[in-house]
Every structure is written in structure tokens, then in C-alpha cells.
Length: 392
Image (cartoon, rainbow, N blue to C red; front, side, top):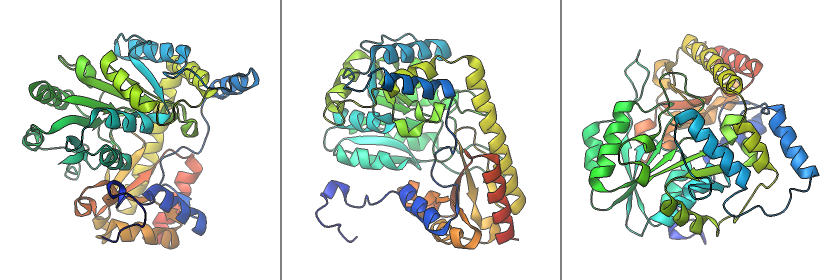
């Protein structure tokens, strides 16, 4: 591998993210961008208005280090309301610059050089970088694409059990899972909990898509016996309220773990997003009708895109959650998803992301491609029409 000049060894191999690369390609070619995972419409007006009001009312200076008290209270209320979990907003909640900072601060705070972090492969791209920055090693457990006609990616329980060893510091679980759309089941969470308790391992759960579950139920690993005292639960307002640029996230867990994470977090951004914090608190207190309509709206978009891709001839793995659909391009006679996605803007006027970039071994995901359906219906229909014309 060619070394990047001046870049520290722990970050060699981490260049520009695939999302930035594909978005730049979309801009260059004028293609419709179904690659990067962000919605193309703003979230609830009452939430954005709350941010505007906060700015006008002078909420523009440093907020408290752990986050504004009312936002921390709203986060605690949210956990009680949706999951019947009681947490102390003063000691069990830390507001962060999005879920990405929560993850980075957690890894930096908890991992020693030489520790291992178990992940389910493929992983969101920041995981590998955060683990490397912390001096730890990523150990992947492969998620296998489902046989045609089935929906959920799966893993080998024995492979997961073998991944736990004396070097294991923590397991990092993303559910609903990006990029596959998998929602981990009760039985799978029970297995993970049993192994964490048996090996005295900390669990870190990335749950930013918690309100985008279409099939099955989102359950908190922290609620399993023996897990409350060893689990850090991470989420954010970006995906739930369609304000991804605000970067308001949070970590929740037992006071000693949150105190450790706060120690690392304070030397990263220190604090962020003062006027956006009270706005996200407004969002978390919206009525059930908002959360129901949000999920149903994305479910309809999932069906629109997946049915269109299936009709074109892709093998489609319908996601149980998130706003990403994975396809296998071999059904259209292609083998290499990276080459496919690089050529797609010119060939079809559409941008997608090659799933291979999410895998430790690119070969495991080489024929897979990820499309984002968190877009307006016109854009989804136009994308399907372009793809149909290109692959007719």
C-alpha cells in the first residue's frame, strides 16, 4: 500500500470517505444521488422553528459540557416513553457532536492499545477509523447476505462466540444496521448479551435508526439481564428528525462509563450546537403521530425503490430498517460493485455506493451495491426510470 505523506500510521489507508467521493461524482456528472445517506427534505417545522427561536433568544454561546439540561431530560424521557427504561439525565446522558463523536469518544476513552473490538462486518466506515485511532484492533463477524427470497442478513453464532477472547474490550453493535438494513432479533441480542456477561465485555450500541424499523421490533441490548451496567447506547437526532447537518447526538449508560466517555469527549469538540440542542429536545417530545408517520413515509419509499430495482432485474435484499437497500448486481451480469458504481453516473445518471467499501475484506461484498431511499418520490421514480433505461 502506498503511504499518504505526513499521515500517522494509525490512519494510513483511511482516505476520503466513499460518501464524499460519490457525492463529488454526482455533482460532476449531474447524476441523481442515491449514494450518501441523507434526506432531501427538512424535518418538522416546529423543530426548525425552535432552533430559530433559540438563536434569536441568544442561545449562541457554549452550552454545558454534558449537554443542555433540558435536552438530557428529553433524552431520558424518550427512553422511558419508548423502551420503559429509566435513566438519570444528570449522570447517565452525554450530548455529543452527532453519534460519530459519541462513538469516537467511547472508543478513545475505553480502549487500550492492543485491545480488540468486535464488530459485525460490513461496518459503517467511521468504526474502523475510530478503532484504529484508539490503538485497538477490529475483529469482524461476517453478516451473510440472505438466500434469494429471504430478507435478513445473518451471522454464524459459533463465529461470534470464537471472536470473544481475553483481548476483547468491547463489542460494537449497529442495529438497525447500516449498510444491510438488518434489525437484530431478540434471540441474536440474547446471544450477544450472554457472551458479554460471560467474558466481561462492554457493549456499545449504535441505534441512530431506532425509529426506522419496518419489520420486527427495535430492542435495546441494555435491557437484557446483566447488560445495563455494561452497555453504552448511542443515538442522535439527525436521522430521526431529518436534520443530519445539526450533528446532535448522545451517549447513554451507567454513570462510570459515561464519565469516562465524557473525559475523552471534552477534548474533541468540547461542546457544540447550542441552539440546536433545545430544538432536538422539542423533537424528542413530539407526539406518537410524528414517529408513526415518519416510519410509514420511509416504508413507502422503501417499497417504491425496492420494487423498482426488483423490476429492473437486481436481486434486492429488502431492509428491515434504516433507509438503505442493498442489491446484488450479479443478476444483471456484473461482478464488481466498485467498478459498477464508478461507471453508473455516466451510464445511468444515478449514484450508488459499493458495499465492498464497508467490508474488511472487499471481496466479501464485491457484488453488492447500496441505494438510499430517503429521497422525494419524484427523485426515486426518476432514478428508477434512468436505471431501467440503462439496463433494459
